[in-house]
Length: 475
Image 1 (cartoon, rainbow, N blue to C red):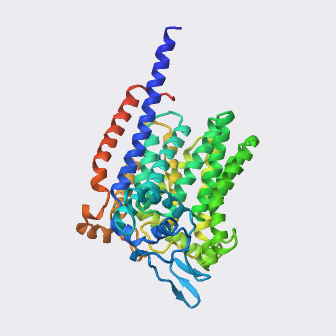
Image 2 (cartoon, rainbow, N blue to C red):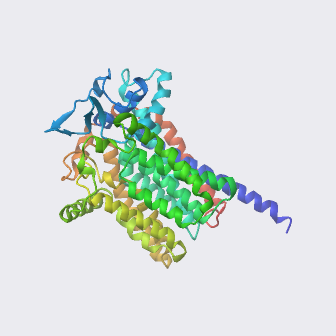
């Protein structure tokens, strides 16, 4: 007996190290890929996302006016006395009709980029690409790893195949891929939220004790607070994750979660108080954008239901399989199954009961917060009985994910500012891609080699984990 213990410990060290390398290589591969396809068309079209960053860092103000960068001298148009577009005037100052989290995250990156001589004025495309790379691209890649870990926690067979399928389907075959190359509030908030959900899953299924549990609870609160600071779109989903945490009845962690939540919300409250004189007055209310308010209108809800139905079907059909697969999870995961179902319902309530559908976009942008959970749902097919049924499900997911990837790749490569939203953008973009090239992607040349190395490491780490038995036992 004693002679077998050293070999078992060695086995666990090898497999644990292999999984760490796999997760790291998965993160780097997705991150570098997202960065490589960041394109100048998005950087130009979504210049407002970077105007707020420049204002915070260079002029130490939350309002946008006064920039020396021509791209940031954005005019405010009015439809009567109401602002038209994404900026408005308030007490003579110009503000973006967006929550400040995206600008604050970008400001941290831009502050350090200036030490290397980079600025929006001197090199707009490279600077904005790097701000995107270290914000949305990175957060989306980390979110994909969170999906990988969540599925591993859920799996009964402990295989790596289903966690990888779930993570890669979310990261490459949904609208999340399209928006990974833009410093975008909804994309950032979606990433923060699923990372928080993973931490709650950890507390539920493999609860740590003592200080570690308190740190995790504080991190959950912080991420939920930052999610709201960044975007109000997933507000109801934040409430669901909070309810999931409460259902664990870990009352000793309540204080730490609340502290984290207050810290996460503090930047939003400070921004509102300084800009509008009221910490609870968000920008879209101050600017007068009623199309973002929840209200009940059956005709509007039915119209939105049809709109999102065909958008999912044509842009991200893998989402339908993820929703269907959620039904396959076993009774032992009933609480987690209901939590994810509640997240989908919360997203539906939000998107079906507002006037706006997100304006110009490629794919269902307002459904970004739901995309990770569709990826998680795919693993429900692993609980099918019979090897043939599982193989057929796996093959079907592979085909649908491949088609979803192609559609998302075209959108990520060419741009997300497509304003004729009643027309399927894929075919139009596919033709326009013939005129695109490496010159349109500021980071592609620099990230090509790291991307190939990290992808090779990912393939090797998958083989290593399989070789040492991680496919059949948990570490």
